[in-house]
Length: 308
Length: 292
Image (cartoon, each protein chain N blue to C red):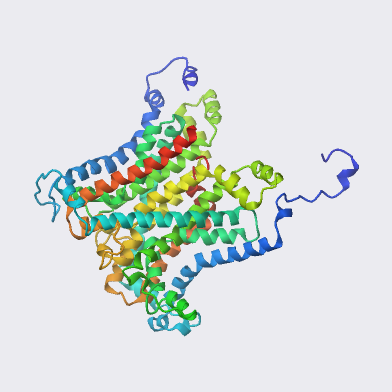
């Protein structure tokens, strides 16, 4: 870069020269400023709100009350801790199923075959479908009286299930919906990773007499480690924050027994259904720190492994 | 090869050998075909169910015998589109998606370019942090600020909030695109007398069209599908389609036909776009996945 600028014999003091010399910050700053305004100020504000008793109208007075909100949240075994547990159950559950299924489907799609285009279209459709509409669609399919799901069960002679309306079945049902919508994402990422692998290690293992399962477990899978971690990172970020389908199908408070109330739904409800901004902000700060910790753990392990 | 007069030139080319084939058994190919059909059905059938139901009367939806055979009706679509101002909501969704994407491209592409070329890891991390933060935690203070400014319900507020989704996405995709674009082209353009910014505008940018298309299409899709921000920040006339559908549930919970028609109205446009731009969407969703 310095070599190219020194080609100019007489450095003129024009705007163009100035812009070229400072293009690094000239180009980066608009985006940085917008993101900063959209994130930094709100984040500081949320921290501040979490230390106040703000509730009701956004224009009403509020007082500084220190860490009382945090104490209240941590002592809340009715809503907060169950929500934490559901968040982890939901994220962990869908992540494991999506990874296993995604890997299986990616391996099936790996080598060329006839009709490849159609399969790719089929797995792309759930990904781009609007989550709220997807929620409504499954709400009809899982309707206890008229839904396709119970019609299928009746066909096999199995009694009807409450699905979304049951206290115990609602969360697993919504996990299924998430798996339906986002497994394709894992498939696409893993497929991109598989396609970029070189054939040689696999060939060598074949010549050494390894069967296909051994070649997958000892050759392909270790080579795919970084791609799998990317898939885990992207999916866990989004699964932790799942909101659209949960709120669209179960409404305020995650259903009458709060049966699908995850941290995100809980924090949203506190903020905008009950206008309890102080406590909501405390929940959000705890939630945010939790996400940062998880992401840090995943990427940290990855760097540690890489340096070995 | 073709100019030599060797006898082999007249022979048909040897058939390309498929390296993998010999060890694959017939049983495996049957298994694979069956599995693929099953996969396609699982992903397509629910969507087909939604589409079919949107053309049924509520009586037919209740009737198991009329799962596939029924007299289609357009009443649901007429009802939905005739209700409040659905065309207004369609316009809102499209305008907010377009404007937030265009603005994000305008600031995001140059930013991604310098972040890639100068390896500004820390700056990039700040932008990508936006990907990790739960939207609600920003929505609370946004709501405070915009409510006090009496701006809740303005298009500008919604466009800005959707930029929060679009900008990190665009920076992420464009950074991995610029990483893969060789720097030599810009350098030789500079040797030929272009300024660094000139080289970016006249060489790099035109070469980036596929990357920009990828980032733009994905950003439009994510903005169109976004629900939470508009749920809080939109007014009666600036609602987006997902919010309009959600409100539909509360006052018409039994009208399944209408609900499915509303769901079709919001999903079909975005799916049509996705089908025509498949290649770009896949490359965008998997951007950076293979480098680790």
